[in-house]
Length: 280
Image: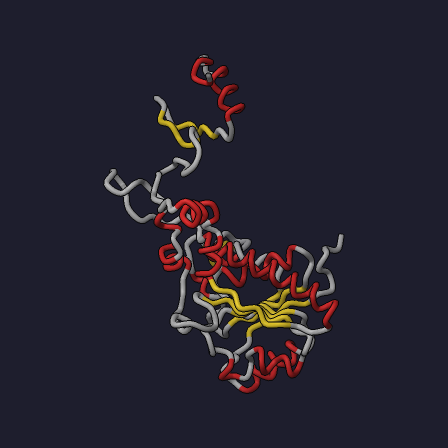
């Protein structure tokens, strides 16, 4: 069964996780995604092993498992964009696709004539999504940005982990690169919005997406607690900043999670554990 983006073509010039995740989501929805990789080395994450994919004989290949987590359903093409021949290939493809995704540092593609301003002259309907750590403008625009760095700068590590002063307390990153993944989700959403708008205007557009912006946005209720109530969020381990009980409790053999979202649930919970008076 064809997906909702069947017939759309995407040129994925990104690498590592945020951009590739966006491209993978579009591929899942039916788009034809062509991943551009560097000669000899390919995407950085092809080498982020072990573990590595095994061949039919059970031997490790040169492709790490990490790479496959963000590049499902894509076609791959090796292009050296530093050479005129490679630049010509990208321009030829850009003239025929609907979307281009890239996560080069600001100005990284402009020196090859592959930035949005250059490619929109070839394809005015092109939706061009640029993903960076800090956006295309501003004092940090030219700095590189990795997920770990942005988790710290964007506030996520200030609310993750055990409280300061307790055993194991201190800044803790999330075990999955969630800033990259959230940015990929935002990118895929923005791209689809731009494609919808194109039906009305007939024109493509440039999307400027920053990891720091996304991380700040997904602070969600923690940010609202501060903006509305002046409550500075902190690390609470597995506890919730607004409701109780909503945490992990140690037992004799392991831990259990108790997640209660309202008073009615709490009253039922108290009956289940044989302490109905707690719910009064």
